[in-house]
Each structure stands twice: as structure tokens, then as C-alpha cells.
Length: 296
Ligand code: NDP
Image (cartoon, rainbow, N blue to C red):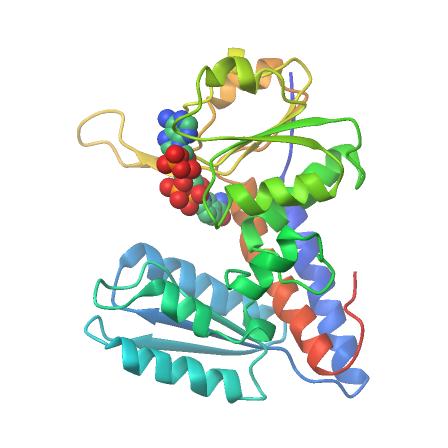
């Protein structure tokens, strides 16, 4: 049976280090890290995410601001707020919660965030840095950054000689994940909805990352014996009428556990790492703004 990788515990360790480093930055006369989270509209899932990010920021000792704008906010008004936050020295990280309402061009808003405050790692400067392997000065998107820490817990930092398959090619998860694995010397294949014979390809992977958004698409016999399986998917499913929705990943956990060497659960795997890495990115931004090297 596979070792279950406890993302909740690892996430707590990351947050504990962020707290310590925040305190020592302040002692050294550096800036208090500041995170601004912006949400437009009242999507309940987005509100839950935003509230937990703001709460975690406070727990880390950050200055934390939440800007809740009405659903009918114009693109110009949102861009105006981003500009204000870009210029605010108390703010080191800006996060605009996606999705945005239809009248707002999300890409335009994301690109308007100053690269040095883009703690989500979505704007072109950070995407480009990750593409060329300039990881030290980039903000790496939080979910793949968190996945890498979980992979490192199993394999260490150097993944030379290992084969990785990433299922999913989104800009938020799949592509940056593949770049990070490549930077760690893995041999990487990216699969997507047009990939033929996904099961056979998946079985070649020493490290299999599923970032698809399809409940339990990865079956037990897709997993090479001993492989490390990182399940990014968060899917709400209702098995029977009237039953409460439960969360499942993109991997059929029980089956896959029989073959895998190590596997992340859903919930309690990648999810808690995402928020922890947002804190780590905001801290790194405050260190850079204070002219100090980022803590590792
Ligand atoms: P996207 O919908 O943006 O991307 C999904 C990817 O999966 C696409 O590249 C798509 O291929 C591919 N895909 C879809 N169907 C299949 C299929 N049948 N076979 C192979 N590939 C397929 O999703 P995200 O990357 O944003 O998110 C993926 C999952 O991760 C979701 O469940 C999401 O909720 C979760 N997530 C979890 C986070 C966390 O903190 N744990 C954070 C972010 C996301 P194509 O490009 O060809 O369409």
C-alpha cells in the first residue's frame, strides 16, 4: 500500500516557517508582508477561498486586506484598484480571485498586476521566467509550487532519471508543473484531452500528476508500481440523490493506492499546499522589497 502524503501537515510546516521568517524580517527592520485579495461578486466557492486566504495571511503576521467589489463592477474600476494596489508600498502581493464576471477581461486584469506583486505567478513576466528556468526570481504559481514540495518529500530536490507525466495543460497548473519538473531534471510528458491512450502513457510515469478536473479519471491500473501520484483535482460529486456533495480527486484513490509508492489524498493533499505557497510567495515578495534575500 502507498504512503499517503499528508499535504495538510506539510502545508502547516510551510506556514510555520513563513510565520518565523515574517517575525525575523520585522526584527531586522524589514517591511511587514502585505497581501491584498480582491474578489468581484458573490460566488460562494470564491468567497470561501478568499476568506481562508485572508485568514491565513493574518495568522502569518501579514498585513491583510480584502477588497470585495459588487458583481457589476466595471473592468475600468477593477483596473483602477489594481493600479492603486500596485503603487501601495504596504502591499507585496496582489491576488485577484478568478473567475471574474463576464464584463471583465480576466487576462487584462492579471497582466495589469505588477510582476513584483504577482504572487499567483500568472502574469507574463513570471510565466516567462518559469519557462526559461529563472525560478529564483520568479513567483511560481502556488498549486504547482506546492505539488513540487510534496514530490520533494518523496524524492528529494533532484529528480534526475525519473519520468513524469502531467495530465492537464492549463496555464495555472499543468504547464507550470511540467516546467518545474523539467527544471528538477525529470523527463516530462504533458498529456491533455487529445492525448491517445492515456492509460499506457500514465503507466510510464515515476511521477504522475493529475490536473484534469474529472472525478477519478485516473484508474488504479494507470499507475506504475511504486509511482508517486499527485492528485490536483477537486471535484464535487453526489453519489445518490439527496446525498451531500463530497470532494474527490482526479485519481481513483483506493485503487491507485494499491499500486502507487506514495499518493496525495483529496482533500488534505495538494489543496492545503496551495494556500501555504501563497503565503510563502507573499513573504518572498516582502523580503525582496526590503532588499533582503528570500528565506528558503
Ligand atoms: P482546466 O480545466 O483549466 O484544465 C484541465 C486540463 O485537463 C486541460 O488541459 C484539458 O485538456 C485536460 N483534460 C480534460 N479532460 C481530459 C481527459 N478526458 N483526458 C485528458 N485530459 C483532459 O483545469 P485546471 O488546470 O485549472 O484545474 C484542474 C483541476 O485541478 C480541477 O479539478 C481544479 O479544481 C483543480 N485545482 C485544484 C487546485 C488546488 O489547490 N488543489 C488549484 C487549481 C486547480 P485540453 O487542454 O485539451 O482541454
